[in-house]
Amino acid sequence: MTYTVSHKIAKSKKITGHEDSMTIKDQSQVELILRCYADLGNRKILEAASSASKTIMEILNTCKVPQTSAYRKIITLIENGLLTPDGSVVKNERKLIKYRSLFEDIAIEILHNKDVVINVKMTT
Image (cartoon, rainbow, N blue to C red; front, side, top):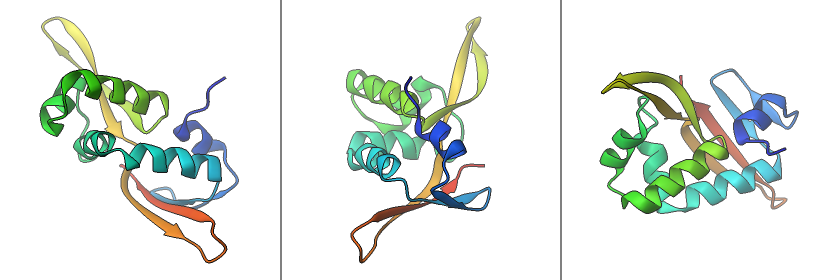
């Protein structure tokens, strides 16, 4: 079974904080988040969906990333739980899912013992 970041965050004991902000210490989650945010295209996609829920086409139009690679990146971000379903809209008699970034703000901290910790503010 594949566990996404959002599923792991809900279950993890290595996370501290309040409902809207938290610190992620689990190194497998940290590595996944770092890999996703290290990619410029992924970052543009996540930033495009951080302020409001958007359909995939709205995300593509906002972030100006080539459509084929952006679509693959969006699917990967959804599978990893960093882009989450957040409502839907009906257009041309089709129901389109809207997505939102899991995090509104993210800060990476490298500790003196070489651990990496991520402080996040969850989207509301």
